[in-house]
Image (spheres, rainbow over the protein chains, first blue to last red):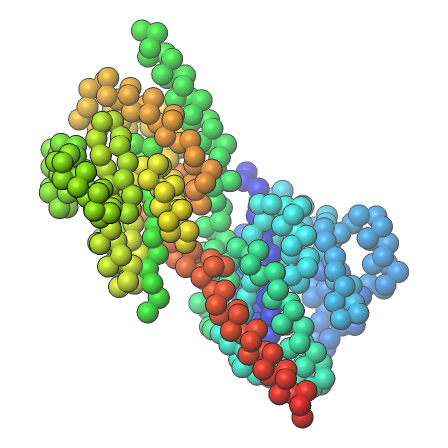
Length: 212
Length: 212
């Protein structure tokens, strides 16, 4: 069985990543969403073990020490990290595992797993981004502004990503994401073994022919 | 209008490139097939200005001198080249232009047009490749063997390609090629301008807010 692909989705806060992730896993069954561990408090409606694993700072630091995380980062005073076991189990079962993580973590993933796919999601404009953040209505203005400032910094490093997805429409963006991931299964690295085998076999055929 | 993408399709002789090219342009209207100029003799059924522009050696060398070719290469004693004007006209009209060329030319294209997409097409195995070459029945055994030898050399450099497409089935391969090209319109380079604009706008919003 072909091993799954590690797909990292990052993007501006308010880019609609959560909605797209939900949609793509509902529509196609080859995806598994990685669930992050975090030390931040749950927002309304967020469920333990579904949205996040909500853990204490002490437990998180234990996970770091025991190398139980693929990557972790600190963001606005809280830890966020990706538990290793779930990711590797899914990849081995042939699932494409999607991680929704910040850019710092994404770049660490790319180093550790060079075959991973980095996708950055953005709304069509800065104004759209601002109105989506305000529309969410769960945070005060200071937090919104902090996020806007953070966004400027956050997109630094995006040049190292593979694709940028402009989310102007949920359905279109979901299909594009699915296509990108399907296409990436044919990246050159994925088939170099086959080419090497064909070369060897061609040499064998050639030798056999010239010996007649 | 978004400029078209330059797509280079190479691959083993007998990989089925011609069939896939025909199929994709029949099915979708956003593609234009580049027509090569060559000094080799027409095969049965090949039409001037459709399969190739068949030109004399003298005329081909004049095209080289006048810089009328995007790339050219010599292969089995004949010249093959890509006339520049047709390619650039199509790209400017927003068409994705597909060039079916050898690996030597492909690597030159990638240097001149870094945004181009390189795709290498292969049959699923060396045996399959051999039987397809024999099945074509237009060439004698010596030529087939020459091609097999050439194939070994020809795949050298494939590491520089973007994708490898295994052509086990015409319809599947056509769809995969179409998806690869669609996906590549969202490669990070294509949207860096947008990200830069969003960064600038965010800075403007931030400045406006902090001045209140």
